[in-house]
Length: 342
Image 1 (spheres, helix red, strand yellow):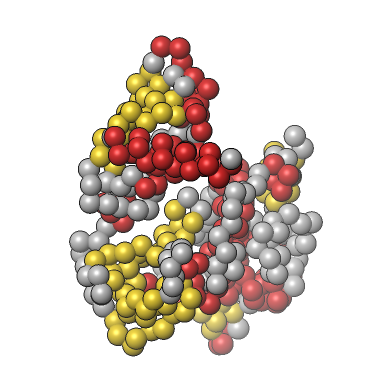
Image 2 (cartoon, helix red, strand yellow):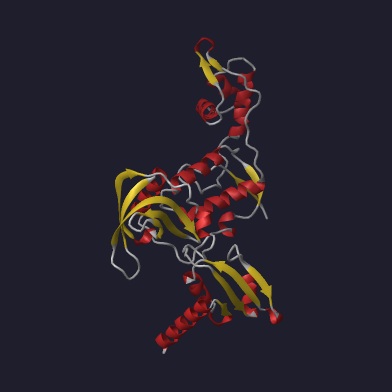
């Protein structure tokens, strides 16, 4: 693979990380020279520094502003000496060390932001990445192929979000606002729900709002795409210390938690077994190898709704052994599919 020159992104788009070199000296090198000059006590100014480093005075002024605001260096301009000094002790210059693997990871993370495009999270995430990139030298030589051609992120079905509603939910979660929702479950008319917005989560590429439902006096899971309107009530709430998303989803197969306790046994034939081995489907899972290459998957779940759909997705490659109600539900659903097909 050929060497690649990676530079700070252009201001108009953080993901454009490859450009031609624009400056005669990398910013980090310039700022080190400025630091050394100020540290010497000679009261350098922008004009003398620009002449010595062979850049424009505007570049020096930008570097000093960065050193003062981003690196928190105590730089002060002294009118009587017509130059800069440190107002406190600076033992060493704060530099950022970064490896080839880390810069690649930075670019990959930037590409992974695709699922947040258009949401209220996009701007602060891109801003954070841009700040990290701006702290790097202008050029870093990397031995890698064009990342645009080698790494990408795709989803099978991209959620359709009303961005105004999503932004309102994100704000409510951050500010602990009580909301009045008009929410429509599939196949049912919309209804008013008064909720305390606890948590927004992206689970397997889908967004969910976890909120306390006042009418049901319990925590409920809402799909933002099904929310028709959001209205803050003007009230705030204190989030209960008992709320833990990890604990809530521990015994679920996705996002739906139930009150039951089910020992689920599913047998997979050899054709599907390798796919099952490749992933951890649930924290409680136990695999048992079978003769002929098949295997059995055992899990402890609190609800059977989501695992039923999952079993059906495997067609005839999966057979439910336990519990009986899951086996009957899968059998009934398969019969309905055959009836529709007939």
